[in-house]
Image (cartoon, rainbow, N blue to C red; front, side, top):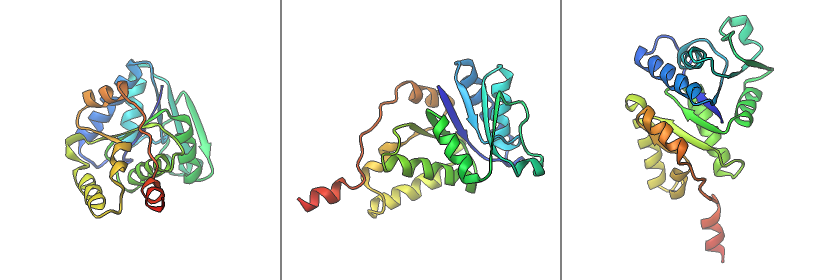
Length: 194
């Protein structure tokens, strides 16, 4: 299985997030799965790559060419794919992955999560999406999404399109037991028109 890990590129975050990402990716590699990630050597991304490397795991990095100028690319990937744009980078990561784990991150990680969730909502894929809520990092975002659901900006069933794991054990348990959820964003409108 190709498992995409989205996460922060920051090195100034609390080390506990880096350590957790390292362990997660090390265990992904131990399972014989491939890590797909954004190709960076810093932050959660870099920690995940180092974790997979520690177990001689297969690592697919996807990075825009301009990251070469910034000297931020993890150079020990099994396969390193260069793109011209960030948009193209996301598309390749999405296409190459069988499941997505959303680790703590900032704006880029939020965007990646909401893009794969939106695509799933629009039935462009049925891949698993796990929000890895380590140390309660995503509590506020999940509350915001609950509020959007309660005020009808997000359909009730949208929350069934992803799962939340509060520990690494829960991440792997959810990976093992995943069953796609059939969802039609427009079903309530279609039903109302009948």
